[in-house]
Length: 195
Image 1 (cartoon, rainbow, N blue to C red):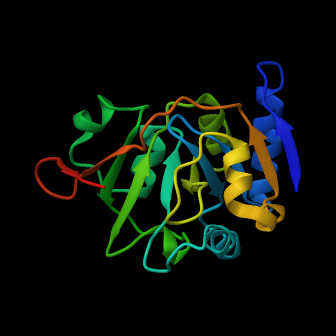
Image 2: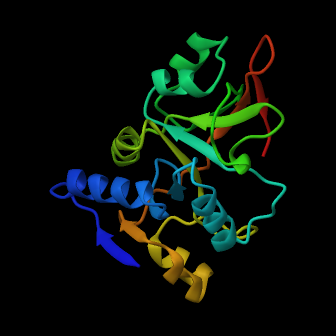
């Protein structure tokens, strides 16, 4: 496991390092615009499995996707309500969309749909850009436990399994923002999903 404290000076270098680790099948903890998250390459089934193992995540759940732009989103999903999405990105919004044919791990989509967002976080966007525009992503808390707003909270929940993370990017203590709002855009009009 490698640990890096994020600063304005090293942001670009950290993004490049994280992207390199992800491209080699690693998993990374990093700050999002909501909570701390876990990311990996959605095309790498073993990396996706490592995230499920770390989180003790039920197999019935899927991972979301973080993309760097609307253009990258269009490569993955069918978009009918483009203006609705455009008005909300980047930001704390996740969209359920019909998926195009993709070569992602099966845990990244279900029943012909994907959960996808453009985070309002420069670090995440830059890492995604270096990784073909897309990352598999989920919150870094252990399933069923509270969201984590600091690396210390993650370590407290994870215990020894924190050693299975390839890179931890410490962005300090985050504001207590809620997770992203979820909108189902598979129909003719947006439908907000309650968590």
